[in-house]
Length: 160
Image 1 (cartoon, rainbow, N blue to C red):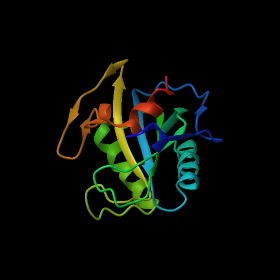
Image 2: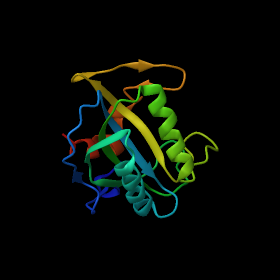
Image 3: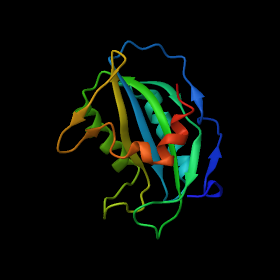
């Protein structure tokens, strides 16, 4: 990928720091993105949902990165970012909640690497400052191939 294929966007909610102090036990690094419709507006709406979700304590967001698709290439570029938050939800239940958010924002799973309105991926989970490893049928953390994706690596550089 050429650097000219990548664009960083700095907007009201991206990047942002939230002063909320939380004693929730899991620290989550969530990959966010989409490439159908007004993704910027949708990601702003997602932040607003997270602000009012008592199960989630927002900590930080990255700037947003426009980048080319991979896998299935005949689709629009993606807008991606990272949200860091805390929660007491166990990983499997958190995944269920995040899938509900995707559906609420119009996500349809038609085929692998298909265009999507919203994509939410758990990249890392930390507990007591230690990275957790999760390997179940529905969830693998750290997220598979995260270290090979500019869509994760570049926004992650902006999150502490």
